[in-house]
Image (cartoon, rainbow over all chains, first blue to last red; front, side, top):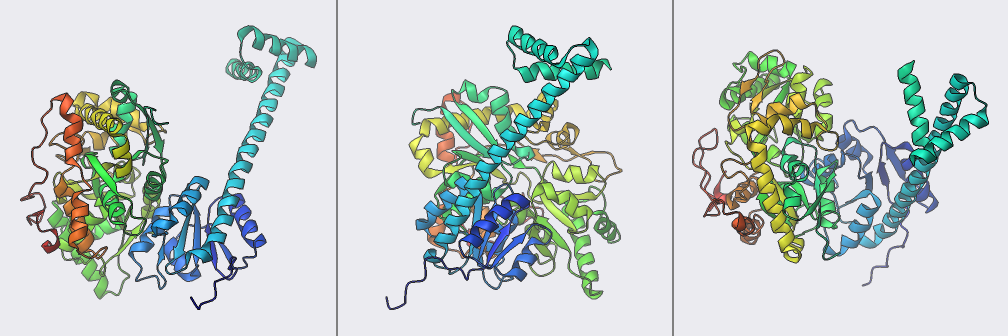
Length: 202
Length: 384
């Protein structure tokens, strides 16, 4: 081969992120920019998706797997005459590892026809690792939110008991704890029943 | 785990996922000794990819998708098989109120036959051309789908070139009703409950059920990788038996109300049960203000050998892929297509049940298509 091998990180590629989740799109964009990619476009509006993509003319498209508009992109395989550079998912058997990694991470990747695998390997790796990082972040956020919700619930149950039974905050809390232990239920479950009962009796 | 009895199956929230939901909820899967785990998906592309990478052992799949995967059109070439059909029919073509009004001026009428409706549409298309109006836009759900081919077949037979005279785009089912309301599309071809939902919210009229275009027409299948079928043949056979029995359950009129309520749950289709009941009972409300009418064989889960994976169904889909330029005709592809639908595995799996199954793999469609054109599966490339 006389042709020089392409750089491992081809930062001239035009990348398009199709994602309605603002935070995830931002996490992915940041990762791609850190890796040196300067041409990154984010598309959040799904109206006329095909036409928008034709106008933007990206080399690689990323779309999250939760997005039903993935099927809109798939049509681009079949109507390549309206797209001046046909776009396809990897069609080479040797790309199956890349597909597997992407699908596992929750991202679909589409690449302009003719782009060599070496040119997109690194950008795909970046996207996959960012999607994984976001999933982890989301699990942590969900847990944090749940913990906060549970704390709020217990606070409300305490408030109800203090008001209805004339208890101190400490006494209200120990009443909840005791009920939870006696009934072998979680503190938050007992708190939820107190809040529900109070709403029903109001 | 090699010895696990768990089978993970992906599905799209549509009426014809019914046998899968029933196999779980009514115990048909458990009775066959399998732990059937269903995963609701948001796109056909996800269904295909998650079958390919092994997240799913099998899936509720568009018949043409199993063929496209086997042939490697537009994606990795992964030998995929369809050892069971998930029913016949179930789709309809719905148009916006303004297009329905325009078609009405050219003879379209409620419950009119597909020829009458199609001729009216063709006259609307020609009038718009003369008036220099933009072409009408129709949506379907995926390029490799019965919906795409049925819509194209009907348009073409009525003198409308689906590639030149109208615009055909893909829109995911959950977004179709809004697209129709907002004028983004003038019509669509989709499975239930989406046609009935469009009618019930007053934004569309059902022009024809696809049962009128192709009576007892092929639709979705149970699709899986050939590799999985070869590795876990007894698991696949148990899955086929449980879905066969679940489909029989879905067919019985005394179960229709319960089936509608079951599918209405968010973890399955998540649409109002009264709307789902229309498709299940083959009684559709075609326009917002008219009484429901009976559409014979609109959706057939089990009768007429509806679960049998006819090789001729695969060949009809292949003929349409060739017709619409998705693929070039080739002899080697033809044998791959024949090997995708697997009536042999269906018969093998059902043998212990002692039920009647067709003895032949293919059938000639003589009077099933509305334009009277027969389909001979022995010459799919010559069929235009």
